[in-house]
Length: 313
Ligand SMILES: O=C(O)[C@H](O)COP(=O)(O)O
Image (cartoon, rainbow, N blue to C red; front, side):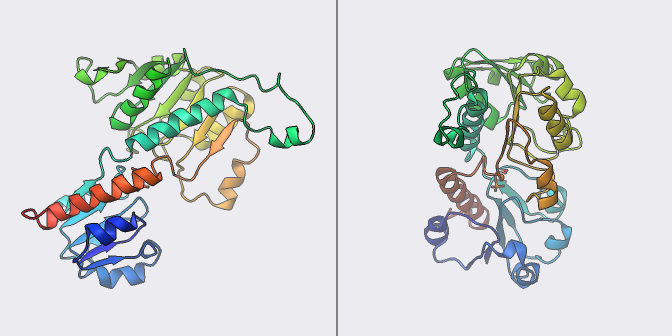
């Protein structure tokens, strides 16, 4: 049996998993009592980022052979526990790169330009041309923290728009071929240099002990006062209170947060973000578009079937 606990493209379920024993119920993530008996029979489990694949869940799934992850972040999955039990984990690598890259560039342009929040004023008879004179993205420096697939897709778009790109990635050596792609060049940088020189800083790292709160008050102090910060990676990498304080103080030019330390935002935590200038909040959708949902879903179907039925897949 294949158990799917969160939303995915329904055609991929219907057509890609036809003739298989499938339970597709996106509400299962919130109904552990309903999920438990299904896990007892599951050979494959398909999840997004909310289902916590921890030992407590795995203990209920003695027949589980593969976990398909409808995305790339793995912080909701205990990789070690899966490995010990011989369970393969398959992220949908590459399938939402373009979606996140477009979010980063589009949101950066929106924040730099600063011109799209004036409907109410204009309808009220104002004509705020001078106040809404914003900035261009062309000629600016993009600093990418982490230089994996999503960051490279972002760099490709940035170069096409006339930006120069610096990136910090301690897992890539300076002579790695990824720094010189056919579409342009990214310059390896130390974190401090990147923070000091970038007009736009975008995060592309997983949440680990090394990356937790790597963008805190000290890091923001190293950034330019007019810099834009975008976090479409994982909540917890950024100290949210530090971002709020810097935006209010005018020591950060703008920020977009798509991911949060606690998701979904509770009304009380959300209130901290109210009336913060030049701040864009989105509910963990940078990687989710109609197109990426289709790609991610079909790739996950393929990944899971390959593990269940290697000869036929
Ligand atoms: O990790 C990811 O790829 C992103 O968080 C989007 O995936 P999700 O919507 O499945 O979490």
